[in-house]
Image 1 (cartoon, rainbow, N blue to C red):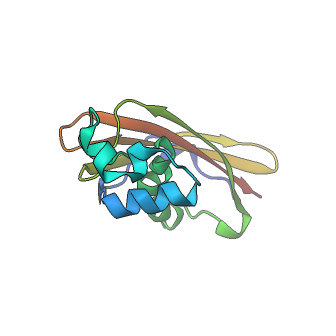
Image 2 (image 1 turned 90 degrees about the vertical axis):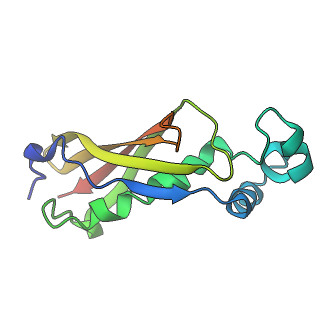
Length: 145
């Protein structure tokens, strides 16, 4: 059964994520970064940011929190057994710092129904406590029929 295009534009409640310094450090170590902006408290405190900052790829941590409610949305009725991650892309606007409170909103921006699969694109827009945009992510998923 095809994903109905009437769901283009559908949104979900805002997700709030508090950026913890230790979480950022753990993530940086997991991606094998040695960047002192991500790991060194003293260095980061003396930087123009004044604290530990997150690597750009940390966007997958706070952005992905919104993917789960979409996957389990009864209206969409996605066949998770046939769903695969297609691609994702990001645009970055402001640095994410430890201590930031991030607010992310998700919206379906496209649905394509093809012969043997459906493609669904979800935009996640994130802003910080100062209402400054942090990043926009487009997550694309493929559901085989």
